[in-house]
Amino acid sequence: MLRHIFIAPAFPECTEEQLSHVVARLKTMKNLVPSIRTLTVTRSEGLSGERPGMILIADFDTVSDWESYMADETHQEIGREIVRFIDADKGLVTQGHI
Image 1 (spheres, rainbow, N blue to C red):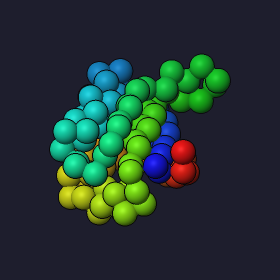
Image 2: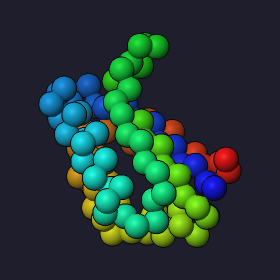
Image 3: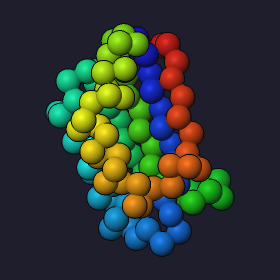
C-alpha cells in the first residue's frame, strides 16, 4: 500500500470559514476519486508556530492507483479550487509504502 501525505499552510488572509471549506471539500474526494482506498483530511492547528492549514493523508493499493489519483480530473479541479486559500508552495508532499 502507498501512503500520500500533503501538508500545507493557509494563506494569512484565509478565514476560519474558508479553511473549514477547504477541509470539507477535500474530504469529498473519497467518494469522487475511485482509486483512493482511505482518506483523512483535517486542519493543522499551527500549535508549533506554523500557520494553520490542512493535512491530507490518502492511501492507495498500488503506485498505479496513486498515479490515477494524481491524473484524476476531479482531484485536479479540487486542487484548483483550494489554491486560493492554501499556500501549496510552502507545503510538503511525500509518498511512502506502508
